[in-house]
Length: 290
Ligand code: CA
Image 1 (cartoon, helix red, strand yellow):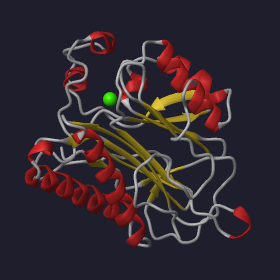
Image 2 (image 1 turned 90 degrees about the vertical axis):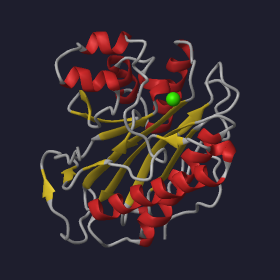
Image 3 (image 1 turned 45 degrees about the vertical axis):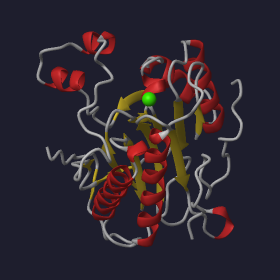
């Protein structure tokens, strides 16, 4: 995962994090958590919100290991929402702050998505890049209702108006998969903030992910966003499942396809992480999974 402030903004309100627990011999072992959060709010409040989201998710996810993944994710999102909302209530500088949050949990060869806002998750499988998160935006909702085409949505000046965020209200209604999506060898997962997806087409994303190792793909994707203007913070994570993950138990329901519950470059540096069991941004208070 990498995160870059972009070419216009001096601060970076995005937070990215991942934990890929290692077992003996470096084998992938246990639950994994990957996330991107894109904060919003004045006075650096966006950074605060996205970091709280990452911190709370990490803390709660691994503290609750072993229970059904969708339940853990739901608790994580509600707890993070509550903590961001409370921090905004107590500190006038942070009033109204919020964040997107797109998280993928992996257990026993399956992936679960939990999501709120307009950051995105994609799956690259068999040369096809598919967005697996639904944008919680006004234009995406209009597309779903058939009153706007995808092309019109992508060009709309209102494309960044989001309908849901974490931390802006006392409660949140995230989209969380009840059942895991079975992963296949050679699957690649992409997480990104809108600083990437606004500026780089799916076709270019797919080419860059398919032709690079994950960290190089992150660099190439960020450079593509910077070349396209880089007007926003840009965050990206690429995960390549090179082999089957050995299942440890069968406590969770697994399906072949995702099901959704909708309640409804230059200066890439300190944000780099190329080793597992380490988060990739500058937030504090998060260590490796154990
Ligand atoms: Ca953004």
